[in-house]
Image 1 (cartoon, one colour):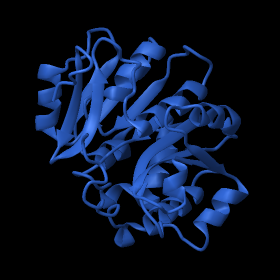
Image 2 (cartoon, one colour):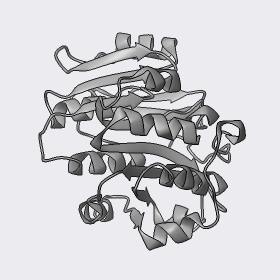
Image 3 (cartoon, one colour):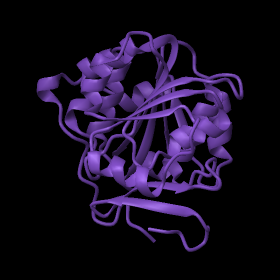
Image 4 (cartoon, one colour):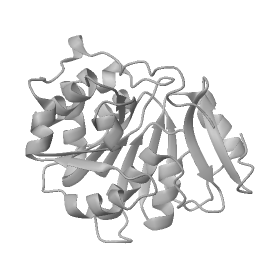
Length: 263
């Protein structure tokens, strides 16, 4: 769907759920709140402009790959998307310019991750939704271990998740990644964290200290401010939740009607 307010901007929906927004003339424009929060983290994971090797699990309309190609020229990016038809649609109508370092792969995200070389990525970004739910096989301890294996020692894992109070899914995801990563942070709108509504939350995981101050400063000054939970506050949020094994894994909850509506 074209955006009537921006000449070459487009909204991608899948089964009625908004998935991506891209402005072909301004690839650094991140319309969705969760995408801006991912962008804030990506801006702080390394010195400005430094190229990165990035594995994107989930493609959509390639919003973040385009952003990184513009903000960190020379980055090598692999985008894994299971929906072959979606890849073809985006390639036809919203093609990426040549020389961007973006390579598209039609494959299952976990299968690709399991086959990826160890220590091959600076960043792994998981933004995979089957319709409007995160698939169960991308939520388990075994999956988190594969992310650890693929990342370099100073690498960062990012995931776009969605939940609402009492946060059974989100708390289990934090517990799962806390079992494999030494550092965690969670970025979300205060109303979501207070349990007032269903919404997105960005998980950040690494083996080294995160620049939480820089991320908090950026998210707090955003047009739609967010809060960064880290350390003791995040441990209290996790509570007694435990890691999820493959045989216990479930998709993220179904959003209530209108939670991710358009307009």
